[in-house]
Length: 134
Image 1 (tube, helix red, strand yellow):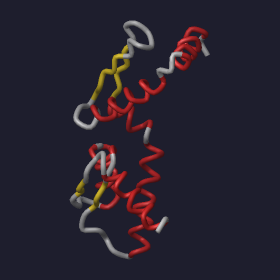
Image 2 (cartoon, one colour):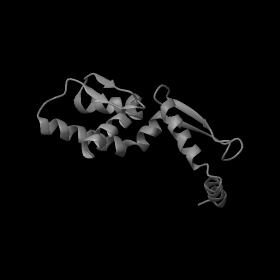
Image 3 (cartoon, one colour):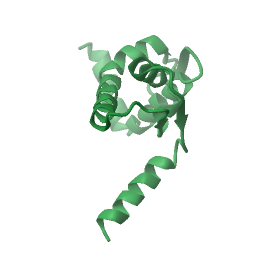
Image 4 (cartoon, helix red, strand yellow):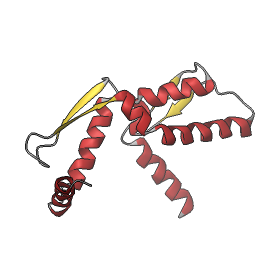
């Protein structure tokens, strides 16, 4: 690894900017839901540093995760023996055209609905916790 890149990584960690970097990655993912590219300024890491992410590159980087999601979806359909009339997705990935396309490729052109992108996962966890800890 290039010494300068390693120094940059260590400085990022020492200055506790890794959370900001993770947040910027999330912002980039959100931007890719409505655009084919997204530019992320990383001046806090190094003056003038910017990364441009491309939806196709993002699709390649997340292909294994999306594949696992589609495997779970196929297993659920197989276990029930029923083809869904629609698919409900939730969380931050609900707006992702990559996931929506994967669903269409997997089960055909069925309506895909999404819920509260921010609150539905927490609501579901709360409901599950109330069932477990009664």
